Amino acid sequence: MSQPQVSLSQKLSRIIRETDLPELITSPSTFTMPTMTLASFRSNFTFGFAHGLIVPFALTAGLSSLGIPAK
Image (cartoon, rainbow, N blue to C red):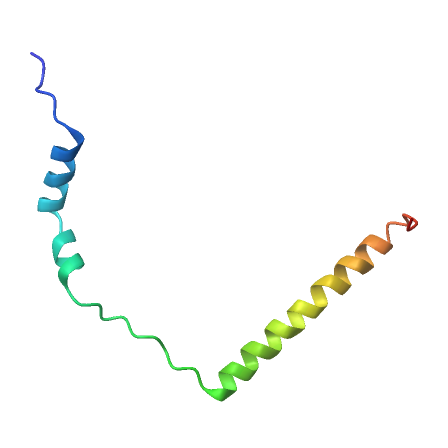
C-alpha cells in the first residue's frame, strides 16, 4: 500500500513540535560578550598590524624570487 503524501510544512511543524526549538527561540539569550582589557586590545592590535605588514612583504619577496622581470 502507498503511504499518504506529507507536505513539507507538515514535516517541519512535526519536527518543531518534537524538538526544543520553540523553547530556544523564546528563551532569553544567556550569551554575554567578553570584556576586552587594554592589554588584550594592544596584543590583538599588535598581532593584527604585524600580520597586515608581513603578508604583503612576504608576497613581494616570494614573487621577486621567481626571477620575472618587472615591466
